[in-house]
Image 1 (cartoon, rainbow, N blue to C red):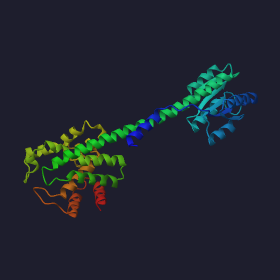
Image 2 (image 1 turned 45 degrees about the vertical axis):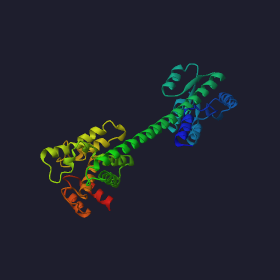
Image 3 (image 1 turned 120 degrees about the horizontal axis):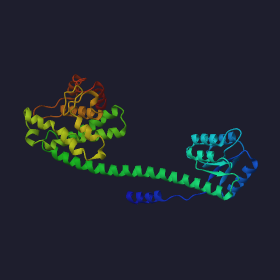
Image 4 (image 1 turned 60 degrees about the vertical axis):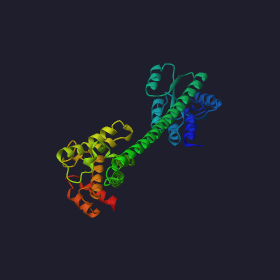
Length: 349
């Protein structure tokens, strides 16, 4: 069976509302006659019933294994039904509470509903009314479990579809980057190397795996905005003049604009925008400084500089790893923080 077929089978199972079965019911009442009557009635209906004439005894059992439905008398000497029900809900918020009230306790009955209890029945207890109330409470419980399962399934399905779209997007963007990097022999493989270095720094900093993925994605796509820079500028062997330099500086903004519609990439677009910002405010495009720069932007920026220093360019030879690290250490506190540089060192060891 294919993964899609298996997923469709699972989906059908998720959408099927489970049948209501007999439940685990606790009955608490200090009147022995009422207690026996309610216990017998619910037992005949197939429910697993535990009867208690003491609220404290019932509470001790609830702590061990909470019931699905708690049928409790309002007025008891040791503890009121509302107090017992409140404690039961603190132990297990899924317990469905049915309050048993006297004929003149209408206000207390309404108050129990406002407290989140499922229902109330009046004394003398009508067997049919109580049976229907227990069934409704069990139905509430089944529906709540069903809705939780549906919520989890929807979250997983959204994530699955998002992952599919992200895979397609990254595959397409990688093809574009390969075409861009083919314009110059000095840039081939550059983006992949920056992505790997970015992820390595992020992991050394102990970031969550989801954040590592976003930073790696930004490392891969950091130069996508270079599509707007002419080949003559990209391959120029000497220093760039002011107008050419301005064209290159625009690649951060262009890259962020390209990625802006791709919300499924998360904060990667922001990291791409900021990867040439510097800790001392000397970077671009917005001259952000310090913690104004996202951590992802700082990491991708450091990874990009590290990779660029160790790659050959049209206007200079590559540096050894040791010389590149020494260059970065000299810029600690200006371009990048010492903490990030140490994380880069650890990831490259």
